[in-house]
Length: 333
Image 1 (cartoon, one colour):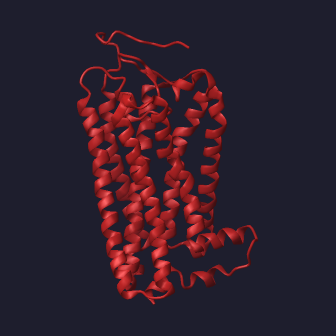
Image 2: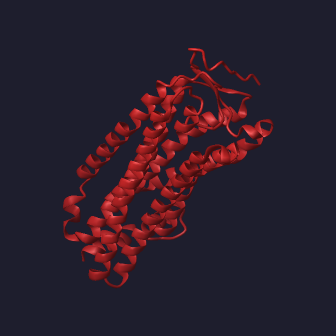
């Protein structure tokens, strides 16, 4: 394998990089194809299965299920931005990627990561309105308003990610051109840069802190108010249903933020942790929530579970009858 190194005093800057992905296992990389391909197939099938049911079933056209579908769309998009190039790199001796392609991949990865956090915030908002303002739910959480919120979240993501990508594009890469990871991440590329890269590092860190603190605080405040209201005004089965739905969203949020926090800590520690462990942590961050989220919602949300059972003919159910007293209507009553 050809490894390219250049003197750091030169004005040359790399425009082509080599993605290794788990470099310590280079001689056995082909063994990684099967598990990662399996993970990719599971993510695609599980997420697309539930999304298709949400799109097809008229009874699942409420804002909550639209947001679940949006979360799954983001999961599939993020995974697809990473997996195909990575699988190609595993199947070939060397996978070359241009700086432009690397920056495009970085943009989509971080955009989907921020959108994932934004969707979780919108889920908390949806549950807050449903439980704390049930009589006004259908007036507030309209399809138009939900689409407007999603567009705002998309715009926020673009505005936060663009400075990171622009700053990285201006870095001079005159050391090694080997990316010792499976994707073009901010810190991975910056570690190949020359000169002072503190501004680029701080920008990425500030964006991560801003998104985590801002979105995490909104989620925490929303669910604290939801819990307080639910305990006061909801009784019986409706209380159990409301708490079950909210706890499902909280489990997903905790999973996403925990994986993100773990990945950030591992990258900040740097050389103290083996590169393969850093890559494994990143893989868990990007792929584990996307693989587990459909299972969580499929098992814990009754309406989705019933629709899936209906499709496969395991139970004869009346979907509309079950949904008649679903979360919004039962809470409103």
